[in-house]
Image (cartoon, rainbow, N blue to C red; front, side, top):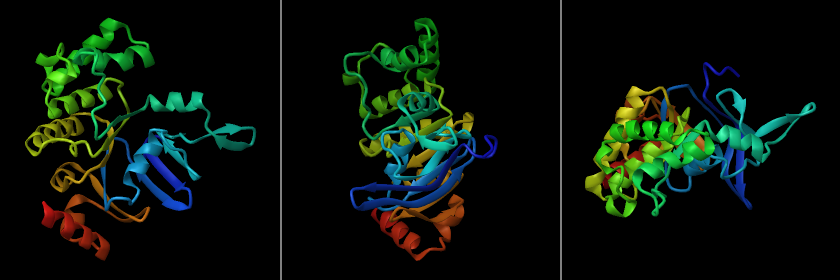
Length: 260
């Protein structure tokens, strides 16, 4: 597999929880710098994909590659065996994730929240980490909140801090898991505007799970429709949202767009 053509590859991935099969021999790729959005009903396996990439879950079968290197397995002699913690720790440095819940450290101010991981995980000096954090807080429109604590911020502001914190690790891949679902409606637009700017001004590869269909349509290079652990449709946004081929995609879009 070439690093220049594929940043993420799922190759025959199966994920089960007990007897319940969540992902069924899943195959897909994401190119470097591409913004791909996953849509589909609850329980279709979208968030499980992100959790596998973050190594919060392990595959039952198949392999996942990031940047041309196998995430899930390492060589041992002539065989490939499940990756050990050391390998996973190294691979995680390439991947950032922004969750539904902001998960900020309440006892730290905004600047400390953004600098903590680069200092501890990347070995940056405090000065380097703070310089990086200041730039990122400016990017997300929070340069005046560096000394504030999370309890002093709105939900939208906390989520923008979480985005800056993920970017501070300089990830090659950024995973977004329903990042606006915990926000009041009037705060959603500000967070989506920040993400759209990051997507258009950086070479980061995005994999996004969202119920914000307009955002998916505006920002995505491709949209993949999931159902029962498989990709049933994969197309550019204009085609998928205006002329989907699969009846299940049409049914899903009618349901979510009518609700909006």
